[in-house]
Structure formats: C-alpha cells, structure tokens
Length: 78
Image (tube, rainbow, N blue to C red; front, side):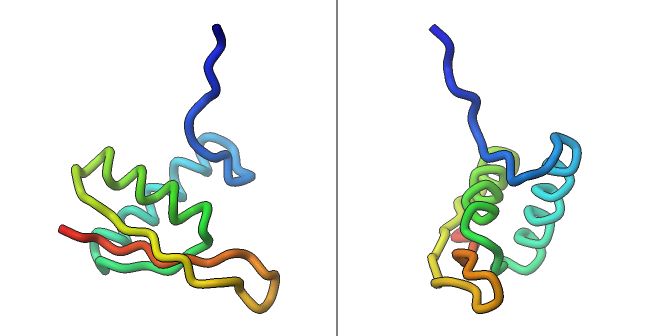
C-alpha cells in the first residue's frame, strides 16, 4: 500500500525548502522565539525537534493584515 509523503511543500522546490527550514531552525535556536506563517511554523518545529532533540511550541496568533495568512510564534521549551 502506498503511503503519503510526510511534510509540507511550502510552494518551493526541495532545495529551496531545505534552505528555508535550515534558516528558520537556525534563527529559532539563536533567538529562542520566531514569528512566521502557521505552515512554516509547524514544519520548522518538526524539523528542529528531529534534528536537535529540542521541544518547540507553536502558538497561533491570527491572520496577517496584508494577505490574511495565518501567523504563529514558534518558541523553544528547553
């Protein structure tokens, strides 16, 4: 039986998506808290937990004014 692939595409190619997640994860580790879109927040939390054994919390904020994209804060717990 075929299984669905894990993760979101984020409207990017594989290399661009990997670079984006690495960049967001690096900023998360440096700053301990970042604000981004909800889809990116969920992916970077998953990416950071898998790669660095760090727990991350995603807090939903609401919608961005300019394009109504759902926003969220990702913060490290440990």
